[in-house]
Image (cartoon, rainbow, N blue to C red; front, side, top):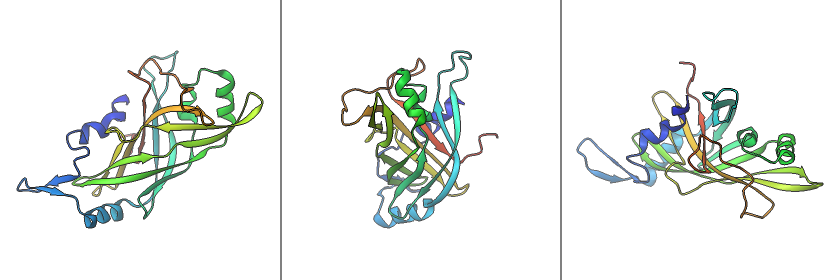
Length: 209
């Protein structure tokens, strides 16, 4: 299951950020505004599926993937929207018990991201997510806890299969920051990561197959 987190990378690693495609005669084409519109028409709509993210299970070292049910939409202004993005994706990475409890008690917050289509065969897009901002009660006061993502990275992108109507998208988490202090993240790397970044995958593919 862990490999699924990187399916998107494997599928389009050779073509990311090319803003082009090749036809049957191997001719180079830049994607046009009309083709971007075609991509959006195909992708926009409401979706339900799974959110995949890594966890650290000390009782079972082979169990390092969790899933949650999730719903999202893509609108006509090329925006990806999750009305309630669960903070469960980062709880395992918070070492401060008081902060972890505060995040557990917080209400889910919206996630918005801009999709930038760059290829039509298959439909492929880069993802530019905004931070998810939670309101938390921590150390006797109300604070803003911002879950930030990496942007302008080849690993933050997605695919849409027009034949099977399947949507897959990966974001790369970067850190959790309190109020306006962006110099210190309250998330720690878990032992399965090579660095502080961590993948989060949306998919409406049937994972039971």
